[in-house]
Image (tube, rainbow, N blue to C red; front, top):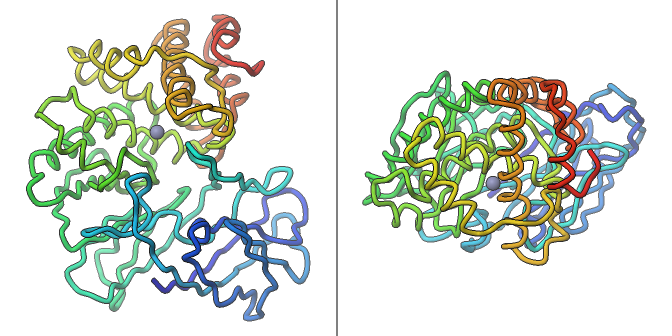
Length: 406
Ligand SMILES: [Zn+2]
């Protein structure tokens, strides 16, 4: 894939910046080659080391000032594994975190090392315009953004505002079901033979967006693409989620299924990860525990007869324990990580919901998304907004689930 990229960056760091640091995930696998980085048509000196691309500026960028960097690069797209969407397989090409992006700056550039589990990237919110042209016809593209109704010459233009990342998936096999939920277009991309499942997850998405808009705030993007893929699990991006074909294979027509439960989990990440950003490496509970507990909210309100099933199937069965504020580098195993961050996190949020009561708890979530939407929140931010919405003392709950003193 050949790419021309322009990055318009405003220095909101509060200090002058002599260099710009970008994350380049395709270079972790060695499939990335860059021709140049230009500033006002002049080549910049840069250093590319693993995922870290550092471009030196000829003069420091003052606080509040803006620059436009242009880059030309090529990707040698790798064969994908079941462990991650990026790459190609027999019927699909998935482009995730496929371009250099400027990482957040907060007392230094925030670019964590990858770990053996969890996600390590941290993102500022950005506005995207992506123009895609394929060398073959008959390719269906599932994307994070909304396509212009009119083609842009041979190109299709997609737009996505206030998002962390722009992902897409291309296939000559995709079939698609469409619906709307609130102001959002919902697209379910599935493979031939999976019509029942493709329709079921579309239906779940309409219900999920409806209840989450009521409880959390307006869906943050113009569209949501649900993409069937040969993976071990689900994976969230802004406006686009991947779901494992094995969930489609297992589906028996009931909401008591991984297809619906994990599908709804990835959709909830549109609010927790997409709208309210966080440091996924150091405070993964802020998006993962919230996404799990959002499943609980979905079943509580949409399928109340399956609410107990959900708790047993997704949480209690695993007997979760461990500090909710475990980071991705500390957990001894994937199971221990999920038990602490995701599942004990859901137990904590259930206790918090019970302590605060539904009215205060959901008002807290509304306040949290309106305060930190398009920004990034920390655990301190989370608990500050929670305490502003309740007169109850929550310190004992925090002390019993968290290592940090929030
Ligand atoms: Zn998740």
